[in-house]
Amino acid sequence: MTDRTDVSGKLLVVDDTPVSAEVLSQVLRKANYQVRTERNGLSAIEAIESDPPELILLDVIMPGIDGFETCRRIKAKPEFTEIPVIFITGSDDTSSRVQGLEAGAVDYITKPFEYNEVLSRIEVHLRLYRLTRTLEQQVETRTAQLRETLEAMQTMQVQMIQGEKMSALGQLVAGIAHEINNPVNFIQGNIVHAAGYIKDLLELVATYQKYVPEPNEEIEAAIEDADLDFLQEDLPKLLKSMKIGTDRIRDIVKSLRNFSRTDDTKTERTDLHDGLDSTLMILGNRMKAKPDRPEVQVVKIYGALPPVECYPGPINQVFMNILANAADALDDKYESLSEMAREEFQPTIWIETAEREGDRVEVTIADNGPGIPAEVRNQIFDSFFTTKPKGKGTGIGMSISREIVIDQHHGQLDCRSSSMGAKFIITLPVTQPDSETDEDAEES
Image (cartoon, rainbow, N blue to C red; front, side, top):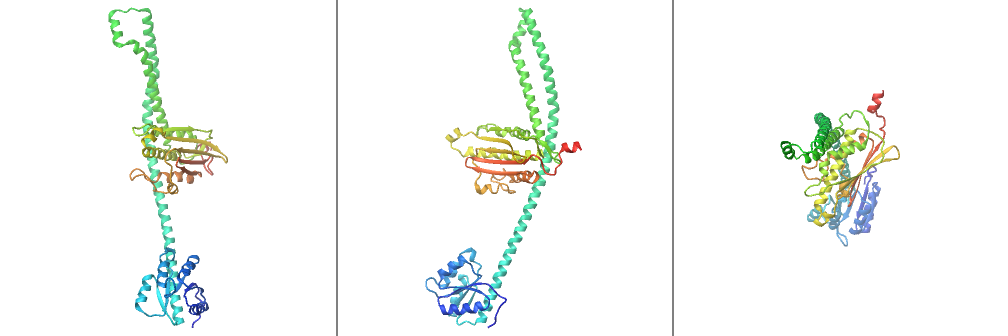
């Protein structure tokens, strides 16, 4: 018998004959194997579950469940499927061998044993088992590396596409805002003069009426046709309404220009409230009442914030992604409610800002929508993950938001949720490490 001192491994011998099990175990231990023995199938299964071996030597004929059934139960467990099983039998019957192989065995050894043959077979199957495990681990490692590489490439591609899209959109919006701003300024400036002229004319008419209380029939008819009393009362209101309208257009233009900040080569000291208000202005139509949903109430709880050093355009993009998702979630919840529950439900978004310790600021955006399930919450920042129907969501908004907040701004983006709604917390440092703002560049 050859002493194989270069081979080692954990073996389990399952045999109900004590003398046979002990003799085989001594041979295996002498060959440098770690050996455990069990007397029946059930105790063997328990032993495997507590400490899995690398190879099992299993007697066919045993009390209780026989070797075939024991093998089937072992192979039924995914974590033990690959462990090689060699049957021990005193019979050389072909049908038994076939039955054993069908149960999941890899080989047979017959009694009385030829121990060198037994050791050779064990060594071969152990090496095959270990080689298989090594290959599986290598495949898993390589697959994980390829998956990481693919995700990195996808993220880079998304960032490039999104960056180009936002840059083009910013330039387009800035151009439109400029074109709108010029005629609006012209109209608004002329409204001021027109208001002065009309005031003078109305005062002149009032003076005429004072000194000529009874005009001739032609003038009286003209006054009646023009409905002078109504004109004198309504014309100032009309001018005031026009002034409010042009002011509104100017605010929208200002919001568009503020939201689409495209010069992101340097950080700027920015009022985050301006970015939030600009985003809300752009999303105004999403918040308005619809035939199938009441108006979304926006509650702003703004604290005193210092100017924050950041890239304004990307940060506004984060606000846009979170607020738009909140509006979608509120739509979904309203649609899921019964008629009675809808009457009591007020869709609401809360925006709260505060300065925190450690030279940081916090922006919290919460809603009273359906909330985000735990299994989904762990994936919402993954690239291309979306719960929206095909064509409605791209799955890149939140992953880009995370990259903007964490990677670009050294901040934090957290999500908390319950059945009462979702809450996103954006934490940003007031000053970026090792950065140069536009103000710093101008001073230098």
